[in-house]
Structure formats: C-alpha cells, structure tokens
Image (cartoon, rainbow, N blue to C red):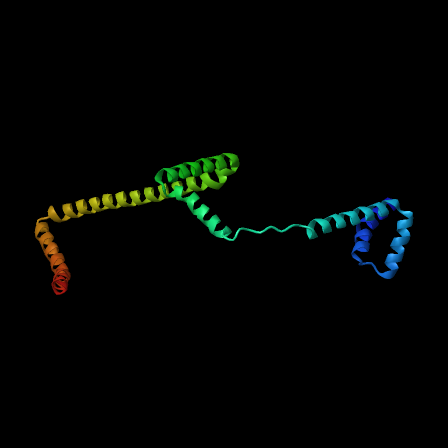
Length: 193
C-alpha cells in the first residue's frame, strides 16, 4: 500500500513541483519527502533533464529560408504532374487502378462486403423484379378481362335479333360524344398554327 502512495506521489507531486503548482506547505513537504525517497528524487532529476533537452531542442532550432518563388515553382510542378491526366491513356490507366483498388478493398472487407454492398444490390433487384412482375400480371389480367367482356357483350348483342341494330346505335352515340373533344382539339391546333 505504501508503494502505491509513493508511485502516486511520484506521478503527481514531481510534475506539480517542477511546474510550481504546489503551495508553500506542499513544497516543504515534498522537499522533505525527496530527502527520504530516492525514487522521487530520481524522477525529479529525469524530468528536469527532459525539460532542459526540450528547451534546447526548441529554442535552439535553426530556421531556414524558403526560396522567393517557392509557391510558384511548386504550383508549376503540380500542374505539370497533372498534365498526364489529360491524356486518354493516362485516364484509362487511372480508371483501371481505381477498379483494382475497389476490388482489393472489397476483398479486404471480406464478409462485410456481402452485407454492405451485395445484399442491398440484391434486394434492389428483387424489389424491381417483383414490381415488374406485378405490372406484367396486371396488364395481362386487364387484357384477358377485356377480351372476356368483349366476347360476352358481343355474343349477347350480336346474337339477339335486334342486337346488331343496338350495337350500331351504341357505337354511334359513343362517336357523337367523342366528337366535341375532337373538334376542340382541331380548332386549338388551327389557332396555334
């Protein structure tokens, strides 16, 4: 238990002593402790050496001057390096490289690729196939129903003694009801031209 207190003292009190964060009573207590604790005294010496080394390293650093046209030279070189991307062959090569990187990343993802990429794609195609099947079934059922209705109405109307006359009257009434729409469209087209 005493070792634990010494380690705690070493970690907190040594740094606080160096930084000058201890009170006067704390400084006196810590200096008395240093006389009896060799580990804390060694740690204090090591931390002071580290601070001196850092002080010399950062304060004595030499600064260097950049050339006057440094940004212009770097910009010109960057533009020249990108000029190859304007070439078709270079773009094709970059596209192949991107595809290879994508395949490698999918391979590295492993099983996660299936859940992140392929499962959503597969479910999208399943939903699309279901919707197309629904539309196809609805259209085919509608056509079959229309065929049955036309056949039933045709037999009921045409096979009766006055059925043909009734059919002609119904067709005439439908054409008369559509005639105003056709005339309005014709006059609208005439005014536009």
